[in-house]
Image (cartoon, rainbow, N blue to C red; front, top):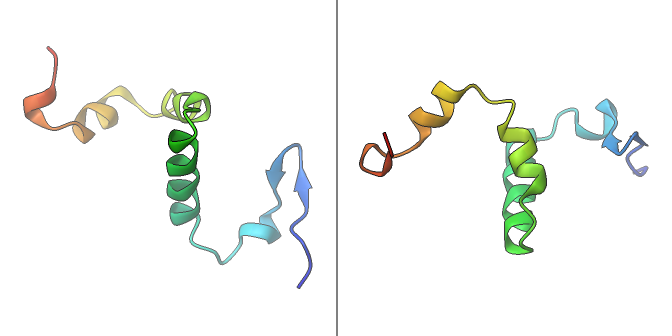
Length: 64
């Protein structure tokens, strides 16, 4: 098996094709949080529409 090819810091299509990308992302988020680095998570969440973020939160925890 050959190593994944990285371009501009991102894995190539071939490196992730057929793998469960959702699980990979969740594991990376867990790792980042455990290390106290939430920068990438914040950057990713900035691209998520506000209504989707709000829908993720429990109703009791919403600050209105």
